[in-house]
Length: 507
Image 1 (cartoon, one colour):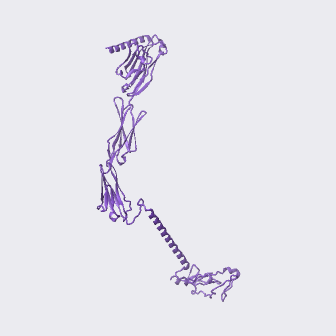
Image 2 (image 1 turned 90 degrees about the vertical axis):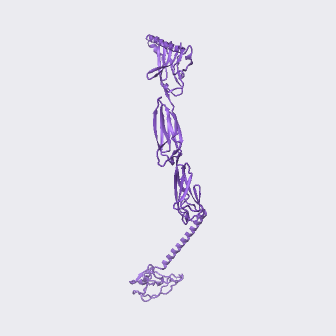
Image 3 (image 1 turned 135 degrees about the vertical axis):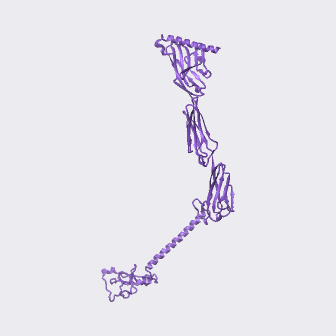
């Protein structure tokens, strides 16, 4: 009953004061307009937070009596009382604001209140609090003064990122599937979502507007799962106003084994030791079963199987050749690796094969140098022999068959074709060391003398027979004094000045 009486009294008091103020406004004139209510144009806060709505009465022309202060909520054209401060009746906060709204200044609540500052405080802000709020002063004799503030309420979203399933299975059909979802729920204003990842995929987006005015944003990330997507990081980035939220997951993708056989280096030769084949498999989950087989036959008798490896005991033989197959199986499926092994008689050391030991390498280099040197000396000896032989033989016959004749300082074969026979020359011509004159041969019959100016025309020509020793102190000298005779048709001229018969040439 007390609360009901207080409410009725406040209402009657408000109507009484407003009636008195209205009746007196006409007699005040323009001077009463100097009073004003000071407020912020807008305020904002997040759901659950606290916000102050300032309201101060500015009285520049006292004395003015404040009869009452009233806070009202204006929403969709409808006013709703929030709180009232009256000097006689005290303070009253109406539902549904009673538990969350209070006057900031304690003086407002005194028996003799001070009502110049009637700022109110909203606690535990709610989305429904968003509206325009009016602060109205009722004064005497100035009348009513009011102002308004717009309150905006923000809702910080709840952000989360989840995997579609804890374990993603890659199928051989290579189909697209959603692997992760990022949600920004019940935000106001709505958030912006983007993805950061090295995965090749695409994102989808969806917005849902809730009844309380918030917005939920959802984004899915779609990929084709495979071996290359396993352990890849996927990050969701949510931007809300000036805030940023991130969340990441690492994909766990299960896939069939990826199999290859290692160990064969294309250099398996007879009697080589310690060869083996290893089956390597990249799989998630790990491979549990390895199975070896040899196409078109059974595994060699000297092979030992340990886990995922084949160890061949003893030296390599031709029996090891063939196509080896390894089947690797995990919880997703089975895949196969194949290698063709061929055996050679000698090592070939292909690139990436076995390295030659340093001592063998050095020995090989030394042997190569020695062989190269012998080959080079042999080639030089052959060239020297050919050169000397060509100096001795310039025709198809023996050098001893050549006949020398007089003529133009060259010797030509004689005896045929009507060539004149010259008398024999002295076998040796000696030139004393202390004489500048040459000893000339005795001239006979058809020979004629030459004068001194033609002395340089004399060209001695000498030969060393093939059977002679290299004694060049005794030389056979011949001089030409007659014109060169004609060469018979059955004679062939040689490069050293001699002539031979065609019969000797074609021997």
